[in-house]
Length: 235
Image (cartoon, rainbow, N blue to C red; front, side):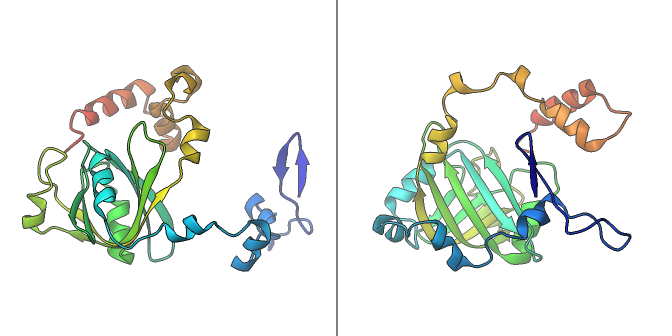
């Protein structure tokens, strides 16, 4: 592996041949990566006592109040092959319902209809959640078993997105703990004065166009389609 102008480039153990392609950058770095969990403690110190003890197995009153303040939750899931995914879910504060101290319900507001998260939940029945409160640096993490429910008695209670959803992700809570604020502090995520200007970023339409690779599409057409889709954001 070599470095040129600060860029890591892959190294190979020999020239490429018809039966051996050049090593990818990932495989080159993976060759001497950490292989066993025990090696990690040779790099990092042991966690402090508070960090070890902060995890609980239920939604206590303070966690319930914090979830009621959250308008954004990130849902991590994986399919049966172990391919991971994370997807945001947003709505008014209290979007996620605490059914009891061991059970949460996340209403599904239809997005692009790929259903990646729902497919993963059906396949593996596990999720990890991070609850975000805008303006707050600490977050709440919840992990547990999950299923996709279409029980009408449940769905009619979940009107945070304007109407009962077609389905909901129900989570059987196994782990609950607060996550430290360092990521939000380091990123200045809640400080508008530190945000990049829109002219310094690729627009949403630019990203979409680069992925679709369709010469018949234009930035303007994609921007119009995006505006129209947002008119029905809770459909």
